[in-house]
Image (tube, rainbow, N blue to C red):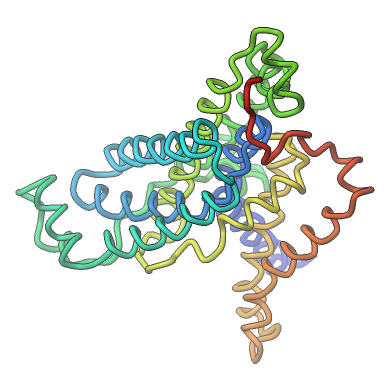
Length: 328
Protein backbone atom coordinates (compact mmCIF):
# COMPACT_ATOMS: atom_id res chain seq x y z
CA UNK A 1 0.00 0.00 0.00
CA UNK A 2 1.41 3.39 -1.00
CA UNK A 3 2.04 6.21 1.45
CA UNK A 4 -0.76 8.26 -0.10
CA UNK A 5 -3.21 5.39 0.39
CA UNK A 6 -2.18 4.99 4.04
CA UNK A 7 -2.62 8.72 4.68
CA UNK A 8 -6.03 8.64 2.99
CA UNK A 9 -7.10 5.62 5.05
CA UNK A 10 -5.96 7.28 8.27
CA UNK A 11 -7.93 10.42 7.44
CA UNK A 12 -11.07 8.39 6.69
CA UNK A 13 -10.84 6.35 9.91
CA UNK A 14 -10.07 9.39 12.05
CA UNK A 15 -12.97 11.20 10.40
CA UNK A 16 -15.23 8.21 11.08
CA UNK A 17 -14.48 8.47 14.80
CA UNK A 18 -15.07 12.24 14.81
CA UNK A 19 -18.35 12.00 12.88
CA UNK A 20 -19.45 8.84 14.68
CA UNK A 21 -19.10 10.39 18.13
CA UNK A 22 -22.27 12.40 17.50
CA UNK A 23 -24.18 9.17 16.90
CA UNK A 24 -22.46 7.37 19.77
CA UNK A 25 -23.33 9.91 22.47
CA UNK A 26 -26.94 10.16 21.28
CA UNK A 27 -27.36 6.40 20.98
CA UNK A 28 -26.05 5.76 24.51
CA UNK A 29 -28.84 7.89 25.92
CA UNK A 30 -31.42 6.32 23.63
CA UNK A 31 -30.31 2.80 24.67
CA UNK A 32 -31.08 3.57 28.31
CA UNK A 33 -34.45 5.11 27.44
CA UNK A 34 -35.52 2.16 25.29
CA UNK A 35 -34.17 -0.41 27.74
CA UNK A 36 -36.55 1.12 30.28
CA UNK A 37 -39.46 0.81 27.83
CA UNK A 38 -39.65 4.45 26.66
CA UNK A 39 -39.34 5.15 22.94
CA UNK A 40 -37.84 8.60 22.45
CA UNK A 41 -38.44 9.95 18.94
CA UNK A 42 -37.51 13.41 20.18
CA UNK A 43 -33.75 12.84 19.95
CA UNK A 44 -33.47 15.11 16.91
CA UNK A 45 -35.11 17.96 18.84
CA UNK A 46 -32.87 17.41 21.88
CA UNK A 47 -29.78 17.49 19.70
CA UNK A 48 -30.64 20.70 17.86
CA UNK A 49 -31.50 22.47 21.13
CA UNK A 50 -28.17 21.28 22.55
CA UNK A 51 -26.34 22.64 19.50
CA UNK A 52 -28.15 26.00 19.75
CA UNK A 53 -27.48 26.40 23.47
CA UNK A 54 -23.85 25.43 22.90
CA UNK A 55 -23.62 28.02 20.10
CA UNK A 56 -24.83 30.81 22.36
CA UNK A 57 -23.17 29.96 25.67
CA UNK A 58 -19.79 29.04 24.18
CA UNK A 59 -19.62 32.46 22.52
CA UNK A 60 -20.63 34.14 25.78
CA UNK A 61 -18.86 32.15 28.48
CA UNK A 62 -16.74 29.43 26.87
CA UNK A 63 -16.92 25.69 26.29
CA UNK A 64 -17.10 24.60 29.93
CA UNK A 65 -20.18 26.66 30.76
CA UNK A 66 -21.71 25.69 27.41
CA UNK A 67 -21.55 21.99 28.18
CA UNK A 68 -22.96 22.49 31.69
CA UNK A 69 -25.86 24.53 30.28
CA UNK A 70 -26.48 21.93 27.58
CA UNK A 71 -26.61 19.08 30.11
CA UNK A 72 -29.07 21.03 32.28
CA UNK A 73 -31.34 21.83 29.32
CA UNK A 74 -31.15 18.23 28.15
CA UNK A 75 -32.16 17.02 31.62
CA UNK A 76 -35.19 19.33 31.55
CA UNK A 77 -36.21 18.07 28.10
CA UNK A 78 -35.78 14.43 29.13
CA UNK A 79 -37.80 14.84 32.32
CA UNK A 80 -40.46 16.74 30.38
CA UNK A 81 -40.74 13.84 27.95
CA UNK A 82 -40.98 11.45 30.91
CA UNK A 83 -43.73 13.52 32.54
CA UNK A 84 -45.85 13.38 29.38
CA UNK A 85 -45.26 9.71 28.57
CA UNK A 86 -44.70 8.08 31.96
CA UNK A 87 -46.93 10.10 34.28
CA UNK A 88 -49.61 11.29 31.86
CA UNK A 89 -49.21 8.16 29.70
CA UNK A 90 -49.50 10.02 26.40
CA UNK A 91 -48.58 8.31 23.14
CA UNK A 92 -44.78 8.10 23.03
CA UNK A 93 -44.54 8.45 19.26
CA UNK A 94 -46.66 11.60 19.21
CA UNK A 95 -44.77 13.15 22.13
CA UNK A 96 -41.41 12.36 20.54
CA UNK A 97 -42.35 13.87 17.20
CA UNK A 98 -43.78 16.94 18.97
CA UNK A 99 -40.51 17.32 20.88
CA UNK A 100 -38.58 17.14 17.62
CA UNK A 101 -40.73 19.84 16.05
CA UNK A 102 -40.43 21.97 19.20
CA UNK A 103 -36.65 21.52 19.24
CA UNK A 104 -36.23 22.47 15.59
CA UNK A 105 -38.34 25.58 16.10
CA UNK A 106 -36.59 26.54 19.33
CA UNK A 107 -33.19 25.96 17.73
CA UNK A 108 -34.10 28.27 14.87
CA UNK A 109 -35.34 30.91 17.31
CA UNK A 110 -32.20 30.80 19.46
CA UNK A 111 -30.02 30.92 16.34
CA UNK A 112 -31.69 34.13 15.16
CA UNK A 113 -29.09 36.90 15.09
CA UNK A 114 -31.03 39.42 17.20
CA UNK A 115 -32.20 36.90 19.79
CA UNK A 116 -28.70 35.45 20.02
CA UNK A 117 -27.11 38.87 20.60
CA UNK A 118 -29.51 39.69 23.42
CA UNK A 119 -28.95 36.39 25.20
CA UNK A 120 -25.17 36.61 24.87
CA UNK A 121 -25.15 40.18 26.22
CA UNK A 122 -27.39 39.12 29.10
CA UNK A 123 -25.00 36.29 29.98
CA UNK A 124 -21.85 38.37 29.53
CA UNK A 125 -22.22 42.15 29.05
CA UNK A 126 -18.49 42.48 28.41
CA UNK A 127 -18.35 40.00 25.55
CA UNK A 128 -16.35 40.97 22.46
CA UNK A 129 -18.29 42.45 19.55
CA UNK A 130 -17.05 39.67 17.26
CA UNK A 131 -18.82 37.02 19.34
CA UNK A 132 -22.14 38.78 18.69
CA UNK A 133 -21.74 38.58 14.93
CA UNK A 134 -20.04 35.31 14.02
CA UNK A 135 -21.95 32.14 13.23
CA UNK A 136 -19.21 29.94 14.66
CA UNK A 137 -17.23 29.19 17.80
CA UNK A 138 -13.74 27.94 18.55
CA UNK A 139 -13.55 24.17 18.22
CA UNK A 140 -12.63 22.02 21.19
CA UNK A 141 -8.85 21.50 21.10
CA UNK A 142 -7.48 18.07 20.30
CA UNK A 143 -5.69 16.29 23.14
CA UNK A 144 -2.76 14.18 21.94
CA UNK A 145 -1.95 11.22 24.19
CA UNK A 146 1.85 10.85 24.44
CA UNK A 147 3.32 7.75 22.78
CA UNK A 148 -0.11 6.34 21.89
CA UNK A 149 -0.68 9.08 19.31
CA UNK A 150 2.26 7.74 17.29
CA UNK A 151 0.70 4.29 16.73
CA UNK A 152 0.01 3.90 12.99
CA UNK A 153 -3.66 4.37 12.07
CA UNK A 154 -4.96 3.81 15.63
CA UNK A 155 -3.03 6.83 16.88
CA UNK A 156 -4.90 9.29 14.67
CA UNK A 157 -8.19 7.46 15.24
CA UNK A 158 -8.32 7.37 19.02
CA UNK A 159 -5.45 9.29 20.57
CA UNK A 160 -5.53 12.63 18.74
CA UNK A 161 -9.12 13.63 19.47
CA UNK A 162 -10.91 16.19 21.62
CA UNK A 163 -12.20 15.68 25.16
CA UNK A 164 -15.77 14.75 24.15
CA UNK A 165 -14.52 11.90 21.95
CA UNK A 166 -12.61 10.47 24.92
CA UNK A 167 -15.62 11.08 27.18
CA UNK A 168 -17.90 9.18 24.78
CA UNK A 169 -15.64 6.12 24.92
CA UNK A 170 -15.41 6.25 28.71
CA UNK A 171 -19.21 6.61 28.94
CA UNK A 172 -19.64 3.60 26.67
CA UNK A 173 -17.81 1.26 29.04
CA UNK A 174 -19.30 2.82 32.18
CA UNK A 175 -22.85 2.62 30.85
CA UNK A 176 -22.32 -0.96 29.61
CA UNK A 177 -21.06 -1.97 33.07
CA UNK A 178 -24.00 -0.30 34.82
CA UNK A 179 -26.52 -1.83 32.41
CA UNK A 180 -25.26 -5.42 32.58
CA UNK A 181 -23.26 -5.65 35.81
CA UNK A 182 -25.18 -3.63 38.41
CA UNK A 183 -28.45 -3.89 40.32
CA UNK A 184 -29.67 -0.63 38.77
CA UNK A 185 -29.03 -2.02 35.29
CA UNK A 186 -30.94 -5.18 36.16
CA UNK A 187 -33.85 -3.07 37.39
CA UNK A 188 -33.73 -0.95 34.23
CA UNK A 189 -33.83 -3.97 31.96
CA UNK A 190 -36.58 -5.57 34.04
CA UNK A 191 -38.75 -2.48 33.70
CA UNK A 192 -38.30 -2.54 29.94
CA UNK A 193 -39.17 -6.23 29.67
CA UNK A 194 -41.97 -6.69 32.19
CA UNK A 195 -42.85 -3.59 34.24
CA UNK A 196 -45.71 -5.34 36.08
CA UNK A 197 -43.39 -8.05 37.38
CA UNK A 198 -40.72 -5.47 38.22
CA UNK A 199 -43.32 -3.47 40.16
CA UNK A 200 -44.40 -6.59 42.04
CA UNK A 201 -40.77 -7.14 43.04
CA UNK A 202 -40.61 -3.67 44.60
CA UNK A 203 -38.94 -1.78 41.73
CA UNK A 204 -40.31 1.73 41.21
CA UNK A 205 -41.12 1.58 37.48
CA UNK A 206 -41.89 5.29 37.17
CA UNK A 207 -38.68 6.40 38.90
CA UNK A 208 -36.54 4.11 36.74
CA UNK A 209 -38.12 5.47 33.56
CA UNK A 210 -37.69 9.06 34.75
CA UNK A 211 -34.00 8.42 35.45
CA UNK A 212 -33.53 6.74 32.06
CA UNK A 213 -35.18 9.64 30.24
CA UNK A 214 -33.13 12.16 32.22
CA UNK A 215 -29.96 10.39 31.08
CA UNK A 216 -31.30 10.23 27.52
CA UNK A 217 -32.06 13.96 27.49
CA UNK A 218 -28.66 14.94 28.85
CA UNK A 219 -26.76 12.79 26.37
CA UNK A 220 -28.98 13.84 23.47
CA UNK A 221 -28.30 17.52 24.14
CA UNK A 222 -24.60 16.77 24.71
CA UNK A 223 -24.49 15.06 21.30
CA UNK A 224 -25.83 18.26 19.76
CA UNK A 225 -23.25 20.28 21.67
CA UNK A 226 -20.47 18.04 20.34
CA UNK A 227 -21.81 18.45 16.82
CA UNK A 228 -21.31 22.21 17.13
CA UNK A 229 -18.13 22.67 19.19
CA UNK A 230 -16.43 19.35 18.55
CA UNK A 231 -17.16 18.47 14.95
CA UNK A 232 -18.30 21.39 12.76
CA UNK A 233 -18.10 24.63 14.80
CA UNK A 234 -20.31 26.82 12.64
CA UNK A 235 -24.03 27.36 13.09
CA UNK A 236 -26.54 26.38 10.43
CA UNK A 237 -30.23 26.14 11.23
CA UNK A 238 -31.25 22.49 11.25
CA UNK A 239 -27.59 21.43 11.40
CA UNK A 240 -28.45 18.06 12.94
CA UNK A 241 -29.78 17.07 9.49
CA UNK A 242 -31.56 13.92 10.66
CA UNK A 243 -28.74 12.60 12.84
CA UNK A 244 -31.16 12.09 15.72
CA UNK A 245 -33.27 9.72 13.62
CA UNK A 246 -30.15 7.94 12.39
CA UNK A 247 -29.23 7.38 16.05
CA UNK A 248 -32.54 5.55 16.52
CA UNK A 249 -31.61 3.12 13.76
CA UNK A 250 -28.16 2.77 15.27
CA UNK A 251 -29.65 1.67 18.60
CA UNK A 252 -31.46 -1.19 16.86
CA UNK A 253 -28.34 -2.12 14.90
CA UNK A 254 -26.41 -2.21 18.19
CA UNK A 255 -29.16 -4.42 19.71
CA UNK A 256 -29.46 -2.07 22.69
CA UNK A 257 -25.88 -2.75 23.80
CA UNK A 258 -23.53 0.21 24.50
CA UNK A 259 -20.42 -1.68 23.37
CA UNK A 260 -21.93 -2.62 20.03
CA UNK A 261 -23.07 0.98 19.67
CA UNK A 262 -19.43 2.01 19.28
CA UNK A 263 -19.01 -0.09 16.14
CA UNK A 264 -22.38 0.94 14.75
CA UNK A 265 -21.71 4.64 15.41
CA UNK A 266 -18.32 4.55 13.72
CA UNK A 267 -19.85 2.66 10.79
CA UNK A 268 -22.36 5.46 10.28
CA UNK A 269 -19.61 8.02 10.89
CA UNK A 270 -17.49 6.33 8.24
CA UNK A 271 -20.32 6.46 5.72
CA UNK A 272 -20.75 10.18 6.43
CA UNK A 273 -17.01 10.81 6.14
CA UNK A 274 -16.80 8.97 2.82
CA UNK A 275 -19.23 11.48 1.33
CA UNK A 276 -16.46 14.08 1.38
CA UNK A 277 -13.37 11.92 1.02
CA UNK A 278 -14.65 10.20 -2.15
CA UNK A 279 -15.40 13.55 -3.75
CA UNK A 280 -11.85 14.72 -3.01
CA UNK A 281 -10.42 11.83 -5.04
CA UNK A 282 -12.94 12.33 -7.86
CA UNK A 283 -15.33 9.48 -7.09
CA UNK A 284 -18.93 10.50 -7.87
CA UNK A 285 -17.83 14.12 -8.02
CA UNK A 286 -20.56 14.74 -10.60
CA UNK A 287 -23.24 13.20 -8.35
CA UNK A 288 -22.59 14.56 -4.83
CA UNK A 289 -26.30 14.17 -3.97
CA UNK A 290 -25.91 10.39 -4.20
CA UNK A 291 -23.13 10.47 -1.62
CA UNK A 292 -25.21 12.69 0.65
CA UNK A 293 -27.92 10.03 0.59
CA UNK A 294 -25.64 7.23 1.83
CA UNK A 295 -26.24 7.56 5.61
CA UNK A 296 -30.00 7.69 5.08
CA UNK A 297 -29.96 4.74 2.67
CA UNK A 298 -28.10 2.72 5.31
CA UNK A 299 -30.64 3.84 7.93
CA UNK A 300 -33.66 2.85 5.80
CA UNK A 301 -32.18 -0.54 4.89
CA UNK A 302 -31.31 -1.21 8.55
CA UNK A 303 -34.78 -0.32 9.82
CA UNK A 304 -36.44 -2.34 7.05
CA UNK A 305 -34.46 -5.48 7.77
CA UNK A 306 -34.85 -5.18 11.52
CA UNK A 307 -38.61 -4.65 11.31
CA UNK A 308 -39.08 -8.29 10.30
CA UNK A 309 -40.60 -10.35 13.13
CA UNK A 310 -38.02 -13.11 12.81
CA UNK A 311 -35.21 -10.61 13.13
CA UNK A 312 -36.86 -8.76 16.04
CA UNK A 313 -37.06 -11.96 18.07
CA UNK A 314 -33.38 -12.71 17.52
CA UNK A 315 -32.10 -9.25 18.46
CA UNK A 316 -34.19 -9.01 21.64
CA UNK A 317 -36.34 -5.89 21.37
CA UNK A 318 -37.41 -4.77 24.90
CA UNK A 319 -40.85 -6.35 25.28
CA UNK A 320 -42.54 -3.26 26.77
CA UNK A 321 -40.91 -0.69 24.47
CA UNK A 322 -43.36 2.12 23.73
CA UNK A 323 -46.06 0.74 26.05
CA UNK A 324 -47.14 2.98 28.97
CA UNK A 325 -47.37 1.24 32.34
CA UNK A 326 -50.43 1.58 34.55
CA UNK A 327 -50.36 0.16 38.05
CA UNK A 328 -53.48 -1.95 38.62
